[in-house]
Amino acid sequence: MQLPSFDRRLALEITGVLIVKCALLWLAWNAWFAHPAAKDMNMPTDMVRQQILGVAASSPALRTPGETPK
Amino acid sequence: MIFAEDVVTLSRLQFGSTAMFHFLFVPLTLGLSWILVICESMYVMTNQQVYKDMTRFWGKLFGINFAMGVTTGITMEFQFGTNWAYYSHYVGDIFGVPLAIEGMMAFFLESTFVGLFFFGWDRLSRVQHLGVTFLVALGSNLSALWILIANGWMQNPVGAEFNYETMRMELTSIVDVFFNPVAQVKFVHTVAAGYVAASMFVLGVSSWYLLKARDTGFAIRSFAVAAGFGLASVLSVIVLGDESGYTSGEVQKVKLAAIEAEWDTMPAPATFTAIGIPNQKEERTDYAIRIPYVLGLIATRSVDKQVTGLKDLKVQYEGRIRSGMVAYDALQKLLAGDKSDAVKQQFEAHKLDLGFGLLLKKYTDKVTDATPEQIKLAANDTIPQVLPLFFSFRIMVGLGFLFLFIFAASFYFLARRNLAPQRWLLKLIVFSIPLPWVAIELGWFVAEYGRQPWTISGVLPTMLSASALEPGQLHFSLIGLVGIYSALFVIEMYLMLKYIKLGPSSLHTGRYHSEKKLTQGNQHA
Image 1: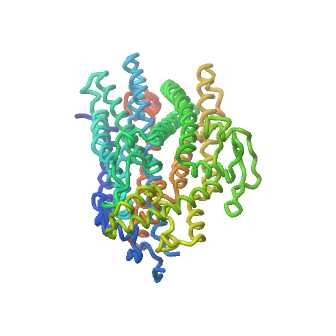
Image 2 (image 1 turned 120 degrees about the vertical axis):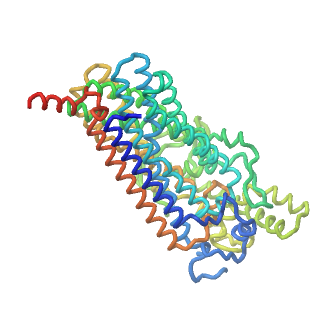
């Protein structure tokens, strides 16, 4: 399909940006999000019980560094 | 304090900043798609070439924005599983449905037809192409519908029930989730705000062409479409915003009271605090200027119903926290294997308050033994920070009325065929181009910050929703994502400005500004 020269230029620009964007998003996923704790929005039920009810929650997210459960 | 707020705060910051970046692109897609439908409909009805040129030119800017914005929301889905694992598990059964529908139906519908829109001009009949443009608009708006159904459920979790065996909320009625009043109001309010943003964009760019006295025939027609569509949209936003206030008064009483800095329950109908300085520590609003009756009328649509103040809501929530402690106790027994009828009944009677009991985990591991002091602290946490909500809301509303003035004045002077001398108005419009985005971001801030301390209102506290990550991991990903999105935003601005400066000349029809200048230059040479 023949596009007017400026449309062709815009199409090239957008294609370039899309490729770079996809590459960046893939890198971001690979670097920071490739190992989700909740795969397919599911976690082992025991871990959730521990988080919600755990008397001595082991999750580092739940405590400030160096702090022990009361 | 037991909880490492670093991780929760960083996760919130990351999600919030990603969502706000993503929503820089969305409003223009939502609104510009309908403006394309209007322009192309005019072309099909009148067969005037200028309307085709308008569709193609604004379509070009739509294409740039669509390409920049598409997939920018996907990082939020990455974050659900990684940064918000407990939240994801807790709500996956409900939340996954609208997100999956959005991904499969609306996204593919939208993307397919966007392709046809650009490459179908010579292959489709005029009516067929208009149909494609209509489906682009429908697809992008449907995308917003499913996302806002998911978000509306976080604000008002209906059609679901907690299952202690699986430790998650499970769907009981998909109809209730889809027809959640909060989601419905949010959807129409949000898309109408997108229409206002797109209208202001087209109006502003057209005003700039008019100020420069270039391509005036093209600009005045674009201006007319944007003024009409914008006026209808801004009126919708204001009416639907009022509806949103009423819905909040019904199901999100704390958010409403916080937005209005309504500390005490006043006799009906409640006064509206137009301006003042909320003082959270003293639980009062300093230097308040109040307008009688207005809040009562907006929030209750009556003159005899009260709007409950924050102090009274806190007292109510203390009761719910105590009830939640009973639910927590029953849940512990159930999970320890005591499935007796008495325990089950105890849990059933109090399970709706389990989330309130969980607020105590910020202060003690032994929720069932919480002290009155800890209960008071947890009840205090149910009230979000009032000052930022109060001012964000007022700026958003103030901007809404500015937009109403701009669109009404534009429409008026256009109808009187007296627009060109109103250079003050054209300049005001050009400078107002970014303001709808400011209003929209503030609207999202009010909606989401006002939901705190919950990720799911009354069900799951934010502090229990975040994953077990190290702050360092979140710092890196936050900086990385902000970098990526900032770069995309800069590229979007560069491409947009480049094609706006070229104007309809970029269509290479030979009828517009730069090309004419070029032809004249050649002739002179």
